[in-house]
Amino acid sequence: MDKSSKIYIAGHRGMVGSAIWRALEAKGYSNLIGKTSKELDLRNQTEVADFFATEKPEVIIDAAARVGGILANNNYPYQFLIENMQIQNNLIDSSLQADVEKFIFLGSSCIYPKLAPQPLKEDYLLTGPLEPTNEWYAIAKITGVKACEAIRKQFGKDYISLMPTNLYGTYDNFDLNTSHVLPAMIRKFHEAKENGNTPVELWGSGTPMREFLFVEDLADAVVYALENKFQDNLYNVGTGTDLTIKELAEIIQKTVGHTGEIIWDASKPDGTPRKLMDVSKMESAGWKATVGLEEGIKRTYEWFLENQDTFKQVKI
Image 1 (cartoon, rainbow, N blue to C red):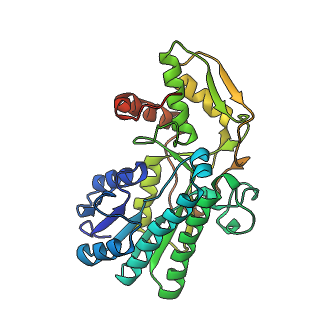
Image 2 (image 1 turned 180 degrees about the vertical axis):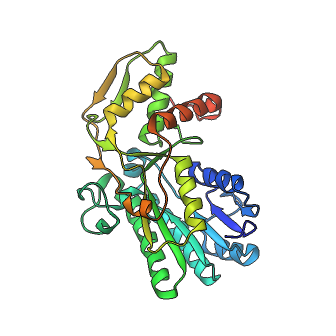
């Protein structure tokens, strides 16, 4: 890959997109394109087609999506399904029409069936029902994976899909109404500590098992995929290790320095019982995660402390 190739990163201001941007810059890529949602509405087919005609990008990295946790997915099922499909369909189809040779589509581990065998292999896609609490987002992402696979099969282009496990890190979303479990815990424990180590209430039983990947590791995987030609169309990206939500809470509590009580609200949904990725395919392709969970949480909390004044204040 030429360091001067014109690379468009969709969603470049989000946690994932900004990490990819920094990783590419650090490796000397000098022709990166980013557009805010006000500058380019990716849901609008005409706007996206016009953008391709004007800018003529050579590589597309799709890190744009409408995202959120269980609460957001439950409350806005239509938006999670339609908007994600609009975003990715416009980018994928415009890339094909513009003869773009390299496209990297980013999805999520939620594309796999709720009760699929663990760890999750790429072959398990479409072998069973999805987890109901995020099926709308998952279905959208599955269509993106299959669209890239179809283009690869029919037109021979290097379109690949990377499916990261649960992501966290710098520039994460810490809004308690829309954030995922790890950043939400960081904020809850921090604010409880600031309020005299008051108890922290967390959703569910604490027993589900989850795998977490530091966002800078994902960015490194994307750069690796950009610079290498993979044999297949779909690859899991993760650490290959998991822990219970209760164990995660204890690590975050210790990192933050909160000494109060943790209260588990078992009346709230747990979500999928376990989600561990089989990352052997990606490792066989030559890439492996390097940032440990405790180190990643420490770096994320340090970033949170430096930037917390910019977060939307939501009462717990």
